[in-house]
Length: 121
Image (cartoon, rainbow, N blue to C red):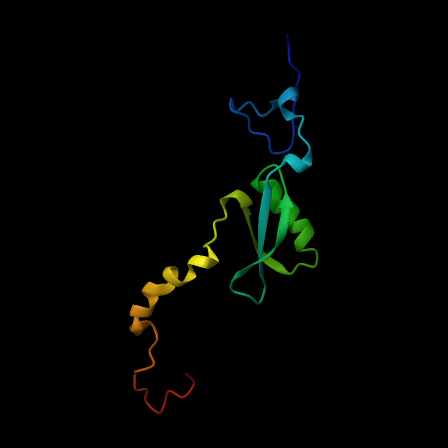
């Protein structure tokens, strides 16, 4: 039996031939992984989560994020992370997670004497 190769955007099969067999690629867009999108604005220094989208791969996710979330040229940088790679702390364990920080008083310089010239702190 002979297979016909059909090329799709973003396909990089195991054998690096640039295509995938049609039988393997009968997936819907909803079967694509979910990506979390972070945008850095022109006046910001940090990336902010702006939404999620489905895409076949990282490059497609960046291009779709550009089209969906930066239509008015607000962003200067786009990050995409596959949702399955995002890990969060458990809110019920917050006390023991942040407990070691209470021992580090040097992180809160409330006991330092500041000179009078330094009045903007």
